[in-house]
Image (cartoon, rainbow, N blue to C red):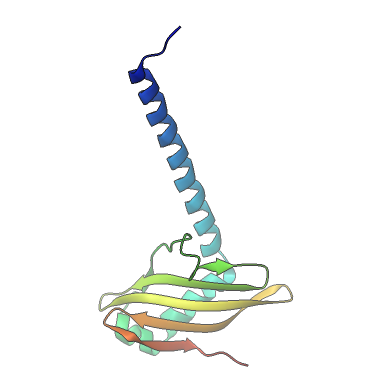
Amino acid sequence: MTVSTRTLVKIAAWGGLVVSSTGFYLQNKLIDRYRNWDSYKDALRKLRAHPGAVHYLGEPIKDKRFKLSDSEHNFSDRTTARFRIPVYGPKDKGYYYFWAEKDNENWLLVRAELELKSKPEERLIIIRENK
């Protein structure tokens, strides 16, 4: 029994679609898991409450999905985490960087900075390291 090339191409196409859809779904589930962390939510709360961030971005300040594949900026292990989150408001957009460390069972924000698209050479300090 021989299978035509056309049939093999269809099988490969459907297989590729299933694999890529599954990868996209799993990546989004993992990103949602990070977005539900208390430290992630706390970091965004602090950004939205910071007078300078509100002044430059405007209200409401919203966040976008970050790229897990960007391991230089988005990283987490058992004791440290760092993220670069795209944020935007009606006046400007940019990236919100924050760092967290695990202290016993709790994650603590140790540093957070806002980089605006209109001023990429400067960063607004939202949370300063307490060391």
